Amino acid sequence: MRCALVVELLVLALFLVSLGSINRVWLGVWGLVLLVGVVGVGILAPLRLHTKPAQAAKLVLLGGFLLRLATMLGSEGIDRYRLAAGM
Image (cartoon, rainbow, N blue to C red):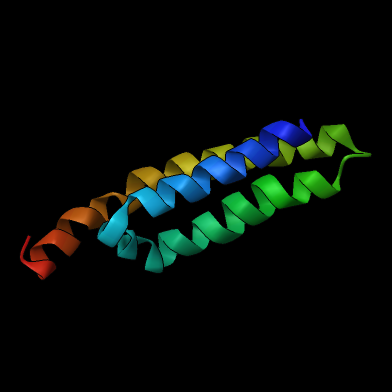
C-alpha cells in the first residue's frame, strides 16, 4: 500500500504541473480540498498509519472521494478562468 500511495502522490503532482496556466483554478476552495483532503488525509495520513491498516484504508477511500469531488467541481472554474483571461 505504501508504494501505491507514493505513486499516487507523484501522479497527482504531475497532473497539477501538466495543467500549465490553468492550474490557477486550484487556488480557491477546491485547491484547499485537494491539498488538505487528498494529500493530507488521503495520502500522507495513511502513510503514517502503517500499523493500523483498517484506519488507513478508510482514509485512502475518503481521499479518493475528495479527489474526484475536487476534480469535478474545480474543473467548472476552468471556463470562468478562460473567460477572464480572454482565452
